[in-house]
Image (cartoon, rainbow, N blue to C red):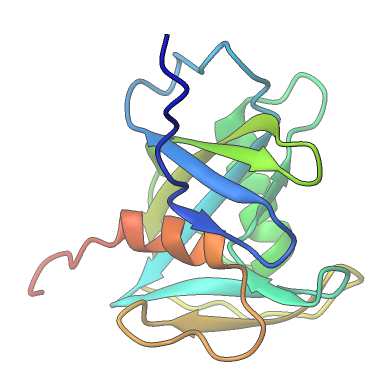
Length: 164
């Protein structure tokens, strides 16, 4: 048996690591670890919405924990609206499951990743959790304190769409 483990795709300043990204069927969540969260990469043109989380003090993708009995898809739609005030023009598209090794003990956990597009930027109102939003072009550096795991996931969903 080999002890080889591929290097993580990305690691943040707290030691949390994005260790794998599994594309596949939305209904076939991995069974080797819990999948309690959903994240959304919502695109407007070539930019993705990022939210500034007051508690973590960083820019990240909208998303969060599922509520009891809630599907990952429903959690993604709810969290996107609650955190950014934005809605996708149509149904979100499931992209895959991100596998994380969470600090400090390396506990494994998954998050379902969804993506969508919007042609209309809606008004944002700051709340207890989210201080601001920004539309980020992943071809540029994300200035300010940013969650590198989420930036990597946003880049995985980048689709130039019609006309580039």
